[in-house]
Length: 397
Image (cartoon, rainbow, N blue to C red; front, side):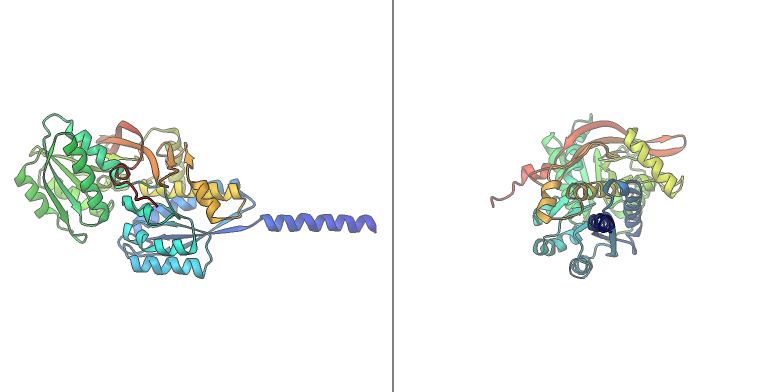
């Protein structure tokens, strides 16, 4: 009987310990699941699901519960309300997502007050991370690609005059300023800086003015997706390439997932970006293969997918290191300096001081391979931190 009681107590202790260890970490995920940005949210959500499917065992017995909320697009008030609900009602321990800059900016006061670590999957305006010590970003900044692209463009033979055409919101402003700074530092002159309203669908009048001005190079930034498809079609229809106007831009204008819909776009367009689905890196090949097994042979991951993938890698890292016991201060310390050498985009790191992403930038040329358009990486600028930080030092605290 005594031996039976001892065995029972031991079994009870084991069961209790297992129950205590098998925690669930609740993660709020704010993205666009409906409205004009639903395709972006879908690419991010697919990456989240695929990452968990492939890596759940690495944090066992801890489990991750993703609590999704639909911000419907660039709606800061909606994003703020949903984030408040996730914090107060759902009691999430971590937050992630946030496609758009206004939405990310709107939630900064909430995460400051509640001390909820928040990993940004996409929003790319440089100033975001300074709004809260609880932000860390794994995606990109507009300056990381536009500034070196401006420098590169100025070095090209026969390119002395540029023209910038950007969507009129914070990422467009960052892109415009970064490209112009890089281009003028290289000895070039920007002859016009035009900002298009966010709701623009007719790009022909803007591009006709570019054709009339006849710059050597045109820099464009619009959000990736159907908007990029529209402006690239207008560029092709108006014959700017034939007029000798070279088109350069960030990866948003030739997003991998939209290339099958850009059949009339001329080859040779140069972009600077941190990810290409066609890149021949082992980690990327494995990622794309897993993606297509899960979502179909004609499905292509994008930089939105990779931002979500690496956000989940960072989240799993802090869960694993804390064995599911999420402490806000410890979490932010773990995110500072976190790196992933096996990201589909190559090495990615969160800077210890700025809590912002450091990564390779790739110069890419649009080419046709076996009848399909691809972004071919032709040059690598290794481990680029955000140039904006150098030009805009943080005030002393």
